[in-house]
Length: 369
Image (cartoon, rainbow, N blue to C red; front, top):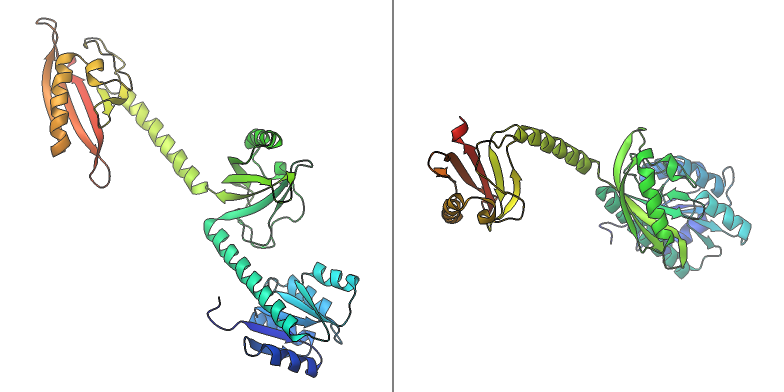
């Protein structure tokens, strides 16, 4: 699990206790010992141990105060703490857990229990650290939503896609209204209604307020907490999709600009799939002097174009299937005296690997020029 021996800092004012614990753990861990709270605070920040075994009853500064100071310091706040105590009381244990300790070991020590609890805590801490790295690299956040009271809790222990460092997200129950963009609240309300009708999950793209008090696009996904049967408790994740949304918006703007440019062209433009059927078509605004075309997406060339033009195009498509590139020709459509001369250009479209994916057809009416 670990590339080197984990470091354990043992804090106890009793040299005998330090000796007993060091002897029990020295074969599996790197051990550092100190006998006062002030020494513990300094060494913890310098050493960054994997676990701190902290005696509760010490002179000058007891274990509770040491733990509180550790948790208040961002450099040591995430260090796992196990309290060592000879006081067996629920009040004392509750006080330590409220301060952020993760476990208790009662004196006199039972060595196998000490070893087991240290191993378990290290495994838990390693798993949590791995999860933090995975969520951070995936730009994921975690939340829990109580539908009845409409309260949401955000995981405050990990970096948030909204720009918050661990510990910076607002603690306690929040309202979606405080985080969600006003224009996206209706979509979230529809998700709430679906969940109340026992929908198995939901997924929605919306904007959340970030640390800079601007908006970040996220993908929110969740499902009911089924293990305990709490149908009104929803858990889920939110993932940063800001870059994707920006790319989509830029693409939509380019497509709108391109559509405007195409609409001004005097040419007929057809996009064909590999079977030669029309996937997209643009007809000139002024069709005066053109033959009768009936171009619609999904039609074949023979359905959409005059037979003479369609026949020539089919032959060129066959040639382009094997050779690639572009073909261009001029064809007269209609009766003598009422003929229309068309310049036709057809190009094979390819993907980035050079594999054919369709054809682009541009037809210009030369009779109008």
